Image 1 (cartoon, one colour):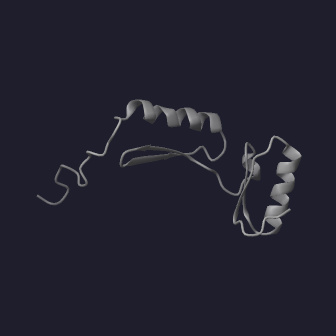
Image 2 (spheres, rainbow, N blue to C red):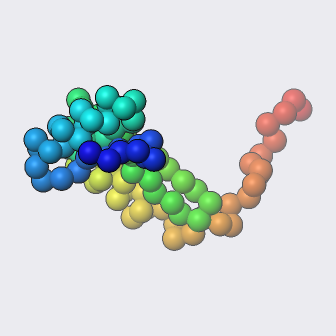
Image 3 (cartoon, rainbow, N blue to C red):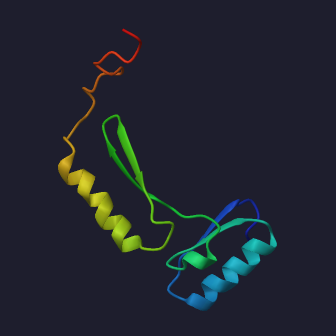
Length: 98
């Protein structure tokens, strides 16, 4: 299995035995591995990201519920303004001593 030149490996086939084999080879070579739909076999998780203009929200369930993360990711897309580029860089209120 040729994993040389790759530091991050994602095993995402529809063959669980092949995903296990990929994980075994990757771990033996000290690579970071994510096995899709198998949280206990993952060395890292891939979170969902919502970007609206200058606003970025990251969502993760630590691999426990990808469906929940996907549905939760859709919520900000529906309720956040189409563009938040107009947000001021600094808060419009005083935060220091009066």
